[in-house]
Structure formats: structure tokens, C-alpha cells
Length: 188
Image 1 (spheres, rainbow, N blue to C red):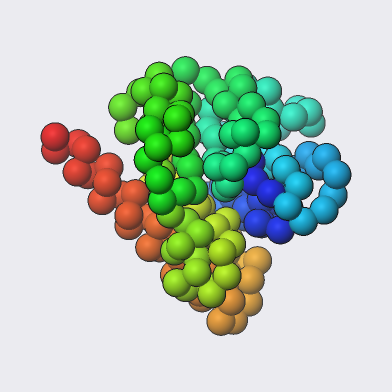
Image 2 (tube, rainbow, N blue to C red; image 1 turned 120 degrees about the vertical axis):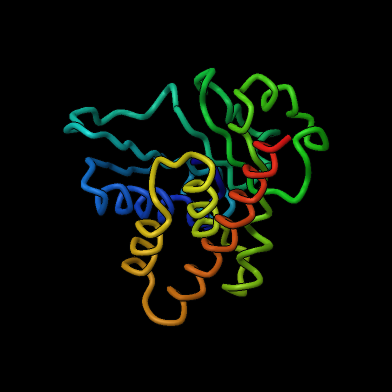
């Protein structure tokens, strides 16, 4: 997961690991920081496995990539190591072509790359442009690696009360957006 400090990148990785754990799987989440300040590039990793995880190093060849901030494309190589059959989830209201990364999306299998305006969804529900929970809902719809109900429970364990409910609503809306797009692509 790539983003900027203050966007909830580390929290997103932790919630994803909790969602996997709730499904009886092994999971670990850990961040990698450069300069620790708001707005600085942040990378967080999440491993999910059906067997015990003994590795503790950064993931150099991810199966899935979540990009919370497309401005990072100009700062770092966020696509480095993404596996050929990997998944790409991008927080944006622009197309891959508008961002000049349509070649990256085109090299992935059909249906493995999707844009979702997660910050806009978050503004609607959470009243802040924090895309992390919305992106987890979108991730569940895109990959099927975790179930939506597990994502919802992980969010509720992380955020209490109204904040938790608002983040769950954002995750549900993003899930619905990506699931509808996947269904439409399957019928074409």
C-alpha cells in the first residue's frame, strides 16, 4: 500500500491483516517510513497466508498494490515488482489513461486493475478525505482475498461509534462501486 503520511496507509494495512485473521488466516502488517511527517510517502505491507508466516522483510514482489495517492507516480516507482497477474487498486476519479499509466493497467489480466474515487467516498461518509477504509471495501470486491463482512468487522474494531459506522459505510459504497464495475465488465 502506497500513500502519504496522514492518509491512513498504516492503519489500512493493519485493518486488512485483522480482516484476514478474522477469516482464520495468518496475517502480518508493517509499515516502512522515510521521513515521518504528514504528506511524506509511506509504504505499508500486508501479508496474508493460509500457513504460518515466518518472513519479516518488505514485500518486493507484491500480488496486490493499493495506491492511495496518485501523485506518488511522479515521486517513486510504485509499480516496481508488481507481479504479472497482480491486482492494482488506485484511489482516483481519473482514468488510467488520464494519469498516463494505462500501459501498467493493460499489462495486468482483465479486471485486475481498477480506479475508485475513495477519497470522494470518504468525504461523503467520514467528512474527511481519508480513503483507507473505502479502499479496503474496494479491495475485497476487486480481489476476493478477504470478505466484505471481515473488512467491516476489522473497521469496527479499529474505529468506535460514529467514526466506525462512517468508515464502514465508505467501505460498503466502494465495494458496491467496484463489484458493479466487475459485473458490468463480465457481461461485455
